[in-house]
Length: 86
View 1 (spheres, rainbow, N blue to C red):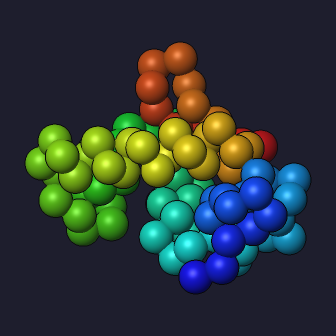
View 2 (cartoon, rainbow, N blue to C red):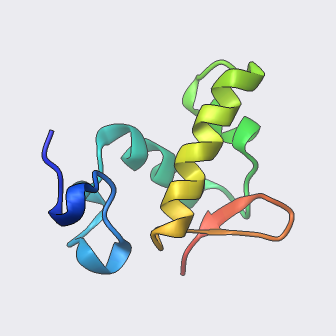
View 3 (cartoon, rainbow, N blue to C red):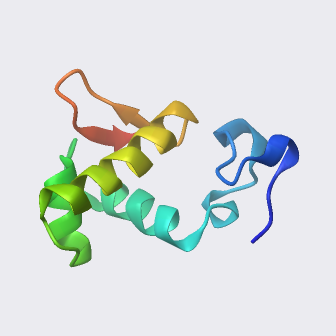
């Protein structure tokens, strides 16, 4: 596993060539959000990916989605759902 400059595993969108620069689990989350018909909640993403929907699992997914949003890969809506950034 390689770290980018500054020790970040998840690059900012403007620092990456494409989603292939993300770890596989983040790529899967990004693809699940992109495949949705609109903004999607964390539990629905867990269900789509076949992950457990126990609160601990959902919170782990939420943390990763928030990281993707903070770095420009996704957009977080005021309701807390996630949507593609563009």
